Structures are given as structure tokens and as C-alpha cells.
Image 1 (cartoon, rainbow, N blue to C red):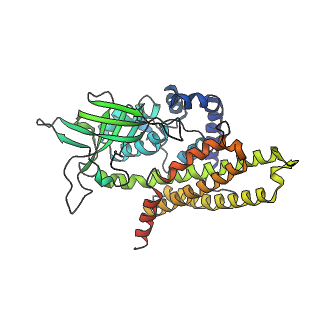
Image 2 (image 1 turned 60 degrees about the vertical axis):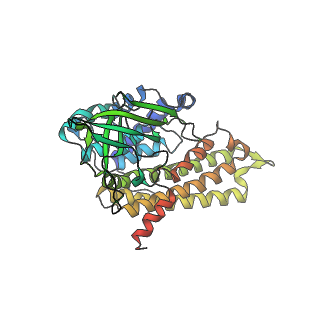
Image 3 (image 1 turned 180 degrees about the vertical axis):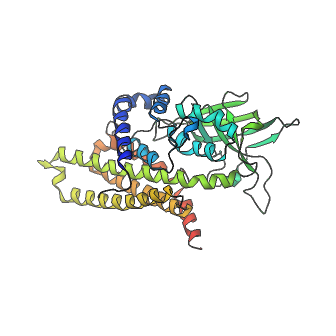
Length: 385
């Protein structure tokens, strides 16, 4: 099905990203997986390409692009074939919008130029050992010093993507107690320099997929955070997080759809070359029907995600619509990739085949950014239930 969501400029950018992945990523990706993250100079190369500063305004060293289409192109050309560029996706797609929308002029001048070049990398710390989807249950806390010059931060976070290599971490913490009437109140955003005394990186977690994403545990022990590093208004973090989750969930939907599409490509290549009982696997009716089902499902999911991309350009994408896209695309991708792996037989279980990497990577998309169950809750509320 011909797509109309992207312009010639987007497609030219796609070719640039595709060429970069083929030259700079694919040949060494296995090495990155072995150490658990890409080399630091990858981020500077991405900065030179303009990938990290797509939404950053030009006066701060970025491209100043509105909407999400260029980010979507990057996601399709990296996640689709089965590559993850460390914490760069979280850095540019999730953290940068917070800095751009809620930062003061002084904060933007201080952080954005170095973030756009890749000299400074960021992560966001929401999840805690006892708090996942229920962000109102966050227990990390900060109190203002007696002289009012800094916050004193204590707590722990887990599952922090890019947490090992980050230079700045956007920490969601409680700066005032919750009330029975409003459990979500009292949460704030603090930007923490990872070189601060009392900041520590714990384990880099061993995941079943996304091996090049340095997912870490973080702890804060009386970390002094300058008051100038409070992002936005004190106590408004929950509202900020809700607004930004729309783009985060759209990004996950785009990437999942691309992963499913590439799974079909890998399966087609395999079944055409693999022979069983004297004939290509592609010649069997079961193979044809399975791939036909997969192609139809992905086309439907892509139609939804492309419509959401258009709505994002005009700021009309709602939380419910983003939840629908994430739910449909991640669940579809899980089914499709599983079927495509099955067509590979035993070889599909070997990590030397890209379908195995996609199979391991796709599972977490039904968890991160809000679980499928949370997506259903968001959608049901929109239905008035």
C-alpha cells in the first residue's frame, strides 16, 4: 500500500539514515550487543547527522522541525531492521521535548546545544523498584535546602534506558506529599548531573532483548541539585508526563509497526531460499497464507499509525488515539514476528538470524510507555467507561 504521510524531504532523510545504518551500525552491531551499549562516538555522529536535535530550535543548534515525522523516519530505519542506537531514541524523542517545552531560556541555552551535538546525553528516570505504571506511587523525594539554593534528592530508580551512559538524568520525584484527594500532586522534575556526589549507577540490567540499550538501576543519596535545575513548575510533573506520553507512545507504535514489516521481509527472503521436501518453503500454501495474514495486519496497523502521524503534525493527536496506536501496533507486531519466526523453523531461534533479534526486542513494547492493559484503560475512559 502506497504511503502518503512522508514528503520528498522525509524520504531523502530516510536514505541518509539508511546509509548511515548500513555503514556505521550493521557491521559492528554484534560488538555493541556484547558490551551492552554503543561507543560514545556514535552519539556525536548522530549529532552531526542532525538526528539528536531534530526538534531542537535552530537558535539552540538543532533543526527546529515541528511534528514527529522525521523522528518516525529514524525509528523505522533503525528499529525496523532490528537495531537500537543505545539511549539516543530516549534522548531525542522523549527527553528533548521536555527541555524544549518546559525549560527556561537559561536552561535551554545551557543544555540544548550540547544535547543536539551528542556531547551531552540524557535519560529520564520514572520507574522505581516498587512503582511502574502507577506513577503517583513514586517515592523518590527531594527537599529544599535551608538556604533555598538546592534540592536534596534521595531515592532509587530502575529500568532506566540510557542510564549508564547519560550525562544528565531527568528525575521524577516527590517534592511535597500527596493528599488523599490528589495522589498525583507534589511530583516535580529535577535535572540531575550524573557527576554529582551521591549519584550512583547500580546494575546494568541483563535483558532478553534490546541488548545495546544500557538499561540501568540508579540511586540518589543526598544528591544536591541546584534550584536552577528544576524543570517547569514545582508539583506539575504528572501533568507534564501525561502530555509527553502521547509522543512517546506514538513513537513506540511507529517502531513496532516497522519491526513487523521488516519481519515479513526477513521471512520472505528465508522461505524463498530454504528448501524442504525438494521445494522452496515459499511454495507451500501454509507459508503463503501466513504471510498474507501478516501483510494484511501490518497494512492495517500502518494505516492507523500514519493517520496518527498526521494528527501529531497539527497537535490534534489525543491521548486515547495514541493509546490505540500503541496497543494495536505492538500487539500486531508481537503476533506477526512470532509467525515469521515460526516460518524460519529452528534457524529462527538462532541470534545470527535477525528475526530472532526482532522476536526478543518486540516483547517489551507491550510494557514500556505504559502496558497494553494501561492502554486499554486509557481507551475505555475515553469511551466514558
